[in-house]
Image 1 (tube, rainbow, N blue to C red):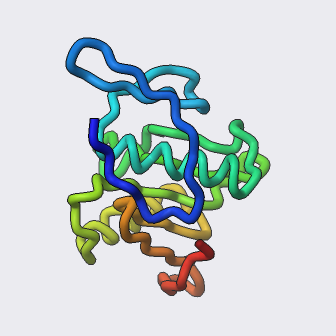
Image 2: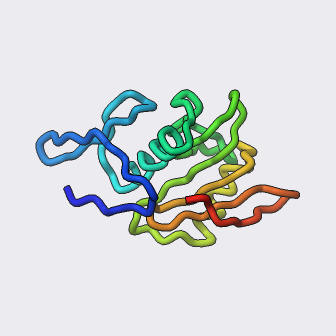
Length: 144
């Protein structure tokens, strides 16, 4: 499988296996194998980034958390917590998906429920960082 090189400063070791014509990646948080989709490739980079590069405990990383938004069940990609308080919401898109104002607004709507201090919207190649300050989002350059 030809996986794109993503825009992360570090290279991470991933466990990848093939079963017939499909590839799977091992998720160290959920302790299970998941279909290696382009979005999962991006999500696993963020998991490793927070765990290995930033030293976060695996227990502080929550993946595929359900949330109810306007009566509809949604799933967030990654939530970084600190002592059970939601801190950073990471929304992952496949590398070929362009990050637009519309995709950021989707993430901001999810965050209206979660109330995290920060949002990261990423397709693995481009990353958008924003902090929620004074009732609005302020964009900043991430520390990569």
